[in-house]
Image (cartoon, rainbow, N blue to C red; front, side, top):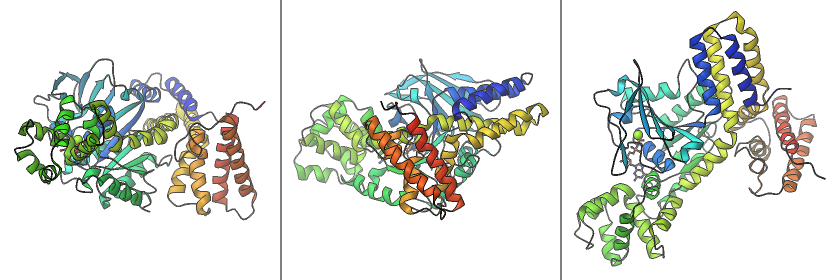
Length: 491
Ligand SMILES: Nc1nc2c(ncn2[C@@H]2O[C@H](COP(=O)(O)OP(=O)(O)O)[C@@H](O)[C@H]2O)c(=O)[nH]1
Ligand SMILES: [Mg+2]
């Protein structure tokens, strides 16, 4: 009987520690893999330059700590992870890590690189006491496939290293339109990161969604229609588990909303309607115009910069609709920005299967270590790694998911969709797998799991089922049995 992925991986790391007991470099790799197995899931935020990566990352964290201007630091891979006290550490390519001073200006974190050039930096690590980072380590990457080849290649090296395991367990990929280079990037990510155990671990975000409808109040509705079309795109389906439209700027600003933002929007809401609409024809006009009284140019410029015209329009409409305080407004704006839906998706798709994704990373890391060490003593370890990689049920589920989303298996469309769901394609908890409400009772879960189990057993016994599909049936059956076995015994 093969252990679960995570227990199996922890066991393999213990074996590796013995095998490499006199090899300091190898032990350092094992330490790093162990940290990774025990730490939070690592999610990289990737996409082209100015896709809105850093802004979205701030929105997820709930603070403006990732720089969103065009400075040197946007060219460096930066890790944001939980720490009791704020700390910024710069890891140069050559030499010892060094601490940078932690300074904030107007709520924003300032990275003072002094004379260090981005090209000489391997990465920066920001430790930050934010509750969101307890669950997730986020990695901001420079833009890929941009005109600037060097920035692009740094991200590619990080996300798609040729000879090392990928540092991220999953990727949020931002795109403004589905561009051929987006598909190319996601394809290479799939080949490298997942190729070894084959899974789909990217979620696409249709970013800057407010701009899709030119900032009109129904922009996000248009964005949702486009996102839905992309999610069914044949090129994208095998690469990303879904496409979520998000207005990142609005999400970021609503999570960091101030009393003055609310007061400014209230002044706008009190204006005569036609006058306000004329004012809001463009950002430029909005900032330059002399009204309303009480709102000066600087305040308007700050409002546009932080919320965009879309955010301001939405804020004004909400205040007119009865929203009467900053907290309530912030909540409504965040909800409508699409951030909530994104966080839900991250929770379902990645966090519910964090153990499997982390264990897989450890296995891939061990395989890389074994390839580079060629130690005779490691023969047994190598065999054990292989056994876990091919035998652990979670890994087989991840792999089947990739197959179902790419080539398909000669199953009827309904069956294929059901198989995808049962192996955890929409998240790994039993209700998500069975398509039940999150608060389904144990009896409902057992009944649904038994029904699915019976259906897939019948399919497996059907002589017309093809061999490849038969393998898939066996994995699905095992997933159903697993859910049933985990249920409390029925009296
Ligand atoms: N209108 C609008 N602008 C955005 C949004 N997200 C980011 N931006 C702006 O786009 C620019 C680039 O954003 P940034 O997060 O630095 O992009 P990155 O290069 O992908 O990290 C900044 O000026 C942001 O204010 C959004 O959702 N809507
Ligand atoms: Mg950035």
